[in-house]
Image 1 (cartoon, rainbow, N blue to C red):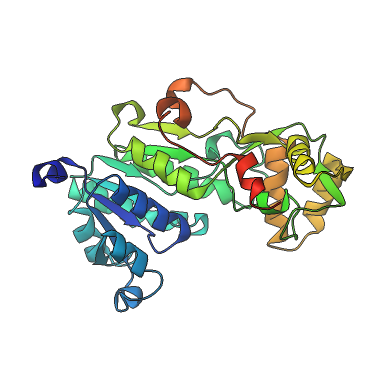
Image 2 (spheres, helix red, strand yellow):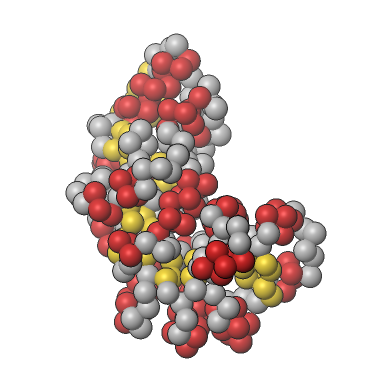
Length: 310
């Protein structure tokens, strides 16, 4: 690519690039030929040969020393780019407030993608039992919109590495081969998307006027499945019928009440998804669904993912 073409591409800063999702976002940005910068904490920055940083450096990312707690370094990093993508965990969601301040002060950012990457927090029907998990994301949305910062929210629902490897059986590391617990009636659908695919869809949005100040939803065909459908797929792969044990809503709520952390949160997310239907109970327009907007993006389906477990 020519120097002029490179200059025309948005410069991207990834905050949280040493994390699993953040690393994939940085590499997806580089694969799309964006000059890509990674904000790296001082203790990581001092070891550029560490396993966390080596893949980023090898792929061509520019490392910038700084953190969300060090405002001058944060502002300096933001001033170098056109797009900021944040991939910190939800428990750190409120730590994005200095980043929002830096974006506002710098005045050069054309798109901010905050650390959402789950289900839409404004659609959740379990806010009375989620221990404030989603309220943090809603608070960050309010801050972004109050400051008038151009943004896109990415709502991808579950990552495939969460719950799917056990076929939604908390405590198991692999799908069961004899009996399986089905939560609710088993017909309410959840959505699973591989992190590398989330990253590819995310990068498609950053220069797309169609997604400016909107929410991008990911509901890829083949990745929207009920628990009964997941079991059907698994049974076909292992050529065996599993005993299905149906757990009622009341039973699940009691389990949630009695469970310790972090199991309690797993059960809460299962209740939200496969009983209340928080991933899919609402309709979305095709103009805000990732696979409709970007049909060229290849992604892993649930069926293909289960092939790796069989």
